[in-house]
Length: 198
Image (cartoon, rainbow, N blue to C red; front, side):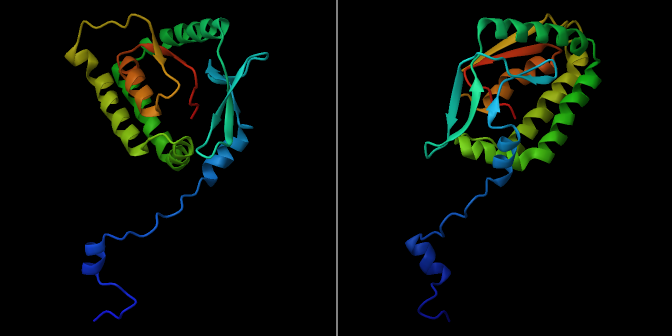
């Protein structure tokens, strides 16, 4: 029999008391942000690019503190990004369906390695992002890539796809827009007010 200080399971269910939520650590995300000096540019041609003399946009956490800053794109940056995607299109579209599928599945391994950091970054930004949901999404679209020639034998990639998203677009929503194009052999350029460079 339970003593008077400890409630029984029945009593807890009756009052619906809940334990306070466990404190979540953001140490990995904070370390990643510090490693990048809390300042981000664009990712083009396989490297991070931070053009000078550009307006910056600050990303704040729920308490109003600045998490990081990102460069705001100008017309020349968007042109350079589109040019980079066009260059990447040549090699990406020439991969076999199996090779494209394997490349997308390699991202699953990357998510496995950095899933905790990604979750923490999303928590800091107050966006919903589940690494396991991203893994399922990557697996789904890698199967598109694998089966493309079987299911759509006459399909030929046409070129670069531009994805325009809002500044409050989640990583999951961005991936839903980008992965179908990548699976089918196209490259993409993403235009957003705030880029999540994870």
